[in-house]
Amino acid sequence: MIKWIGRQLSAGGVSLILLLLLIALVIFGPLIAPYSPTESAGVPLSRPSGAHLFGTDTLGRDVLSRILLGGQLLLIMSLASTVLTYLIAIPIGMIAAVNKGVVDDILMRGVDVLIALPAMLVLLVVLSAAGSGIPIIIIGTAIVRIPLVSRVTRAATLEVFSSEYVESALTRGERIWSIFIREVMPNIKEAVFSTVGLSFTAAVLIMSSLNFLGVGLQPPSPDWGIMISENRSIFEMNPYAVLVPTLLLAILTVSISGTWDSFERRSGAKRTKTPVVPKVRASAR
View (cartoon, rainbow, N blue to C red):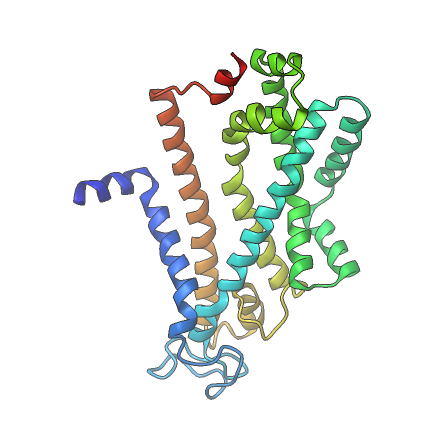
């Protein structure tokens, strides 16, 4: 067991442990929160004490209780946005790759426009036009992450489509969607999913920034970004109300990125040591 822990720690296990601890905090935090995160629980701006471990904010709400619930909605929304990103971006990239000409130009020019525009500007326009509800925030965040994933998918699909086994499938008259599922997707998954860590981290940062700016989730929602924004004016009186959520956000983003990078390195090492013949080649013979 000790040797296994040592191997994990030497290969990015610290990031994994931190991420698991934060996930546990998000899951069990609401169960152990001593007070309601949205209602006054004491004298406003109380300093840390036995009754309030991290003190209270300007409205007398318990800072610890808000911290324990502050990451739940953020993680759920970031995960939903990341899933939506890939559900939209992968088909866009694959369709653009196999339909050279007008279809490719239309899809990729749209992607280029999104790349050229600042992500926050696009989000602010979307939120100002459609409102700042949770579904809109999720969709808007997905929209600004689609260009990267769709371009990676397109490049990987173009490479696979030039292979002999795909050309054989086309010659046999197989349907294009069958080729996508059986021949293309198994061979582009490494390239596409190598961007998952970056996309998830970006979603967390984007949503936290929106909440901090006051255009995402609205008070009194217990959110780390909102807490930083609300309590920055009282930093000298209760720094924990700002420092703790800031630290948790930093740990969350770093641990997600580090865990995924470690996973990618391990997967790459295994593929190098033990090459596996793709199943699609067997179907092409």
